[in-house]
Amino acid sequence: MTAVVALVTLSLSGMAQAAGDDPDPGKELVINGDMQMVTRVKAPDNIPGLTNVYSGWLFHDPSTQAMEMDDFDNPGMTGAETGTENWSVADGSEGKSCASCHGDIEKMKGVRTHMPKVNKDGKLWSMEDYINNCRTTRMGAKAWSWNSADMQDMVAAISVQSRGMPMAVATDGAAAKFWKEGEKMYYTRTGMLELSCASCHEQNYGNHIRAEHLSQGQLNGFPTYRLKTAKLVSIHNRLKGCVRDTRAETYKEGTDALRILELYVASRSNGLSVEGVAVRP
Amino acid sequence: MKRQIVLGIAAAAIVAGYANAETAPDDVKFVDGAVAQSLTGKPGDPVAGEKIFTTKSMGNCIACHVVTALAKYPFPGDIGPSLDGVADRWNEAELRGIVANAKMTYEGSVMPPFYKVSGFIRPGDHYTGKAAPADLKPILSAQQIEDVVAFLETLKEQ
Image 1 (tube, chains in turn yellow, green):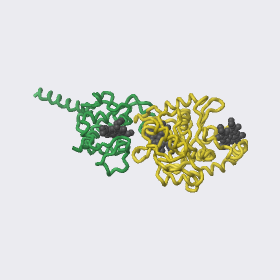
Image 2: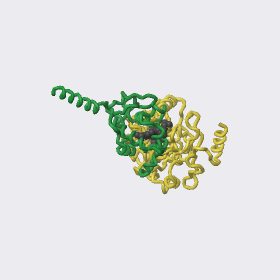
Image 3: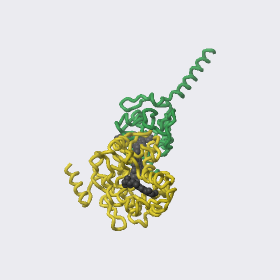
Image 4: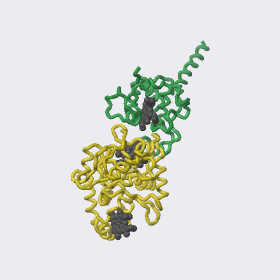
């Protein structure tokens, strides 16, 4: 116990890590040579299953890690640039762009850190929901489909504004009841393989499932650029894929079940730096 | 003469009976995690068992277990223990029980049950993400379980 406290103190003061389960001791993520990311931090108090939380970045091989350390080498930044261009392109019957109301996209700084969050009507919304609501009710434009390049490029562009800021998803107040449901989902063993998220990402992070190195399944790097599919992956798509991999019936992107699971999983990342757009194998 | 025919029919019925005497997943009897009776009454084939062990769409045991004898299959996982010498640690009935439903041996194990069809939460149709059909089949058939057990029995060090 004392040892754990001592380690935590060390990690908070930014000194060398010695935690036994650190996936890549001593390795630091610095983007473009000057943006220092927090990739390990003491787990939030309401996540008793973890002592420390680790960014997914720490679990990958040095060449994948390196791609995220320089925006020129990060293939996900192309999507973020396209999203940034679209920010000021008018669309829909009102002749408005995002910039018409929100001004410079830099005003979106901090938004990623607290998504998903409960809206004014008490509904839990992901970033995609806020974007589509602005498009349909404020711009008179068509909703973007969840996994489309238009949508994920915009999510990436907005996420990049918060790079380096700590994830700070609200789990109390109006969010509390959704968070509790999400927690239950996280620990429920689904499908014919009878595996829960915790079976892989809490009990077995650091181990391998065939060739794959299991991370803690954190959300601070989303949307992530997957080299295998050569595109940006939405949070809901990733969660859906993991549910499917338990040989279970999945949920579709943009359903309440995945919003709720997203909230809980995002809160497990609280304290880690927003890295969006992260690079994954 | 007549009697012989009757006997012959009886014998045929017994043979046919064997062929049908597959134990259904819901009827498997576990005693302390072990399943004494063969699920098919037919011996397992260790060569077929190796294939099931190493094939993703079948047992995919290699996703979690290392076996030195299977070094030609790259990147085994390490979620479960190495199975080298596993047949020295467990007898056939115990191995059958572990493969059919490891939770009967190890409470709360992350090892999936390979011969089970009921009691799942949101079971799917293979890896399609769609809901499972009403007549859900176990991940491995009775004979495939026997084949895997026969393969595991080759993993002896003594």
